[in-house]
Length: 164
Image (cartoon, rainbow, N blue to C red):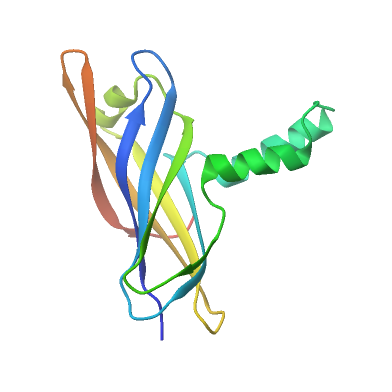
């Protein structure tokens, strides 16, 4: 009675031409015969911090500085930004799509083509009906093709990686 989930990126969008804004669309699929509960996800680029951790730290910094935004507003912004608000229940065969907005280097296509590459890590945490916790991190290499002024992106999957 172990729910099996998979997380995989679908699209990568980058602001064009010299904008560092990016968005990653990804989906989570329950390919088992058992429901999964409290499904959460997160993302990071290369060796950067997980976006959820970064958002929490940023919200605390804003509160400490006496920023006119409240921590509660920043928590709401964080949840929209990271798309990691838990999905209560994912039935067998069901999938959900999420999007994370963020920033990336302007030269992300050049980085993707470099020797070290540009990597996207997607993390998923879920629970079984008996409250057993599962966690998985998948690493994807971002691939980029340039045609004149256009950049097209796709992903190359790696095996599951140890949870950093």
